Length: 616
Image (cartoon, rainbow, N blue to C red; front, side):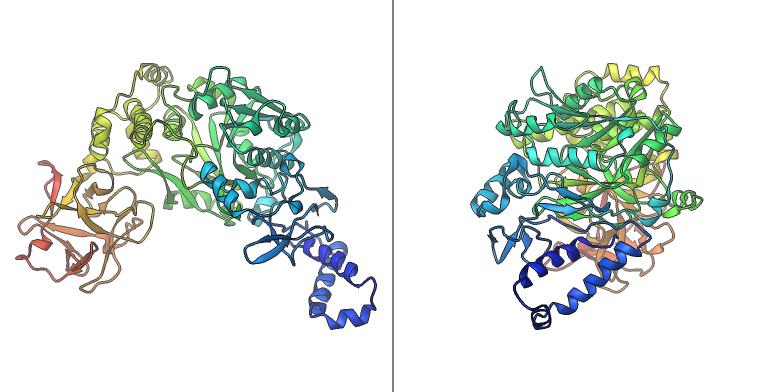
């Protein structure tokens, strides 16, 4: 974390503005901030004259406004009221090189002169699914903390790495958030590594994005930035990314979402593995920009990898022991690149020629969803490797839901994504694995996925490996043949064990709900090692006494606490360590441990699929 000198300098300015008509000693000792002033003055002097390291700015524009006692060098501006505090906006800042930089607001607005409107803020929030009202009043070139781990700054990169086309595809995106992405790319990248920043508009009809707008005029002032528009209507994100990729001319293509902010040194770690191996695909470490306040939440390190489940969703997962051991051989193991089986999707870098060779995106997929899994499979199974770089930090606005629809109703939206997932399954899952996917996702059987023959032809031409290679060498996910039972775990009253929406929440209580027959959150794999696994987590318990909850946690092969034996005579699930049985909690949907009682129906469970060659 860098040293904050901006606050000190601004306070100096404010202080001497206040006291210019008054005796220095009188005002100084009268005010409570005298002690703070001395500390900050000492810090400024140290940083300016004795500091040996870069001094970084810590200025956040993470609210509609800034508290009245922070970072305001426009001392004559009007006060802006929002809820319970008065605030002012910053109009310039001091960069880490000591230069003063003017902050740019979209449409050249003066945010100090605009009264706050909660009604307008809510209206725009609903339309754009993030705080556009705030975004339009936040500088499009706002400074950011350097949130990288300290060892990232010790890594050196060659000067002759290839330049990149950075591609942003957007549809009716707020101009302010697109331009904030563009400015962060230009401000945080070595110029020789930027061939172009290509903006591709997928047929937006938003007024602020049209020709002649402040948005398009501002783009013309930026170096290496060009705007292309769809000439064949809205194609959706997947098709638009394909078209944009064909227009790009850089040796490396870097795809970013149009609502990101790049941090210091973000590009070099993405380009370097591709410089060494043209079949590598790289992804950044993704920080969070909160959709309500545009706050940047940036952990110094995120030691996770992209995993997969049988409904072909990407899920974050802890690093395997094997991957940790490989990274420990690096001089700076904390920030060594991470082999990642899957990518999050929107943010990655790849060699342009190799991307063309392996088929770019599947244009039979529509709008959004599943394209990240398809590309991950093609990279790994067709001769490539996929990395995630902890030193490439890119912050991303995560919305609560999509601001646009995929169809005319929720069912159509669901079917668009399901079609994309089924296309992935038809292309990459062989034989028994395809059937297992259908058991997990029975709704997919009736979906028309269209013709996938061209994708199968690419797979054949490239001599890609089969899916067993992925399971054995890339992502250790149990197949159906590794289980002694699968599917629903049902009670006599037709209720099923359910993850209760906890597919991505470690420690979630296991619950009992009515069986819906849709797989997914009620589908379980009873592995040969007697662990019961769902979409990502396995059964565990939070205690060893009656009444302890059965919970869902990361798998730990060294823990017997995750082992449940099945008594085929009494149909009971017995927790091996405590010798207690899985039961239901009175007056609740939670599932607990209780003293085993073969006469109670509350402890009887049946599996949907069992196998004669693998007895329970």
